[in-house]
Image (cartoon, helix red, strand yellow):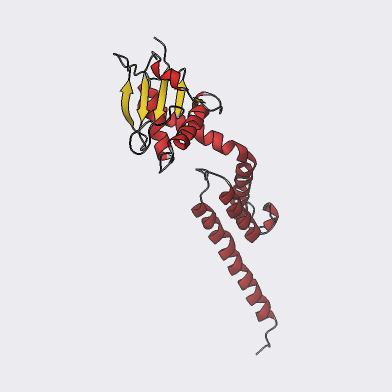
Length: 223
């Protein structure tokens, strides 16, 4: 038994007005693959008030990130394919991203892939694909984070250990980079950066104030 299938995307009224709003899968056409793919698509907002063609394009791109090294799944199936005897039949996907109907479904469903594992694989492929163009920004964020750790630790609060050579500029650059990347890394959040900011700047300001106070005392008239 093969694993081919077609996904047809219906409009908000449940109607299939255009059979070109389809995706053809030559492999991974079983429900154990289609259901996780649609689940992740919904979590990413691909069915939020979208035209069926738009939803199809997003799902095809996500499926391609997962199954075809970034190349979208085949789309634009013509009307003649609606009569194909496909291995897994035709999935009719409603405007909410749910499977509303199966046409020519197999008598026995192949369920080789656990749902949660497939969802994790699809999401991982998506994250890697989306983040790949921002490798430099992620590298810099990691570098700046390590600088902050050094500054607060063995670096004895000396700004020569910071990439920016200035604590305020270092924090500012980290915040800027974090706004540029599509997904915040697990190892550095805005809250983490604000934590560094509080430790690096507030204490630094206090030290500067103490130094200035000592200098003022030195020049105070003697009693």
